[in-house]
Image (cartoon, rainbow, N blue to C red; front, side):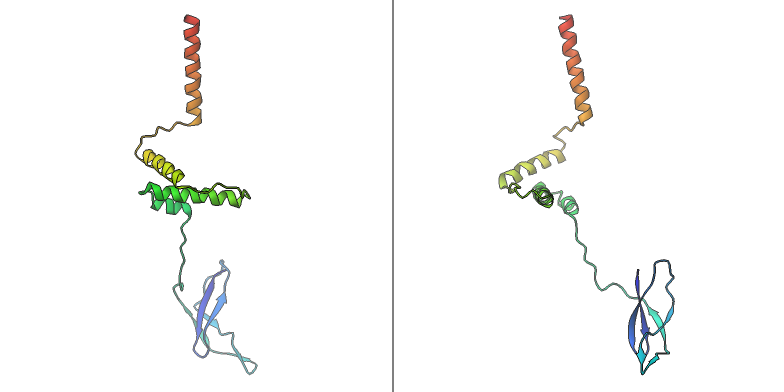
Length: 142
């Protein structure tokens, strides 16, 4: 439910909680009670910007921003995998080592430059079947 701000000429600003299905009224009655009587002033709707917004990037956003630097991306990915394992209750997670980061960074860099050829499990299975069929033909024709 959104909170809308209205301003009473006598008592200042106050908030009104509205349902999402409701339209925001241009005026509202002040909720202030003085000497047992409600305020009779008409309060106008006030448009305000949010006081502040905190944007927190996820590990994936940070990794994508740092994609230009494979070492930094390797750090983010390693930290994420370590945190994920701890969240699942695995407390015996190996520590991140410098050597491991360098190996991962080199692999990421090679992948970025297209030096690593990726094949899907299905393609690998097809290739394996073709190799076996070729060997069987060679044995049979032999």
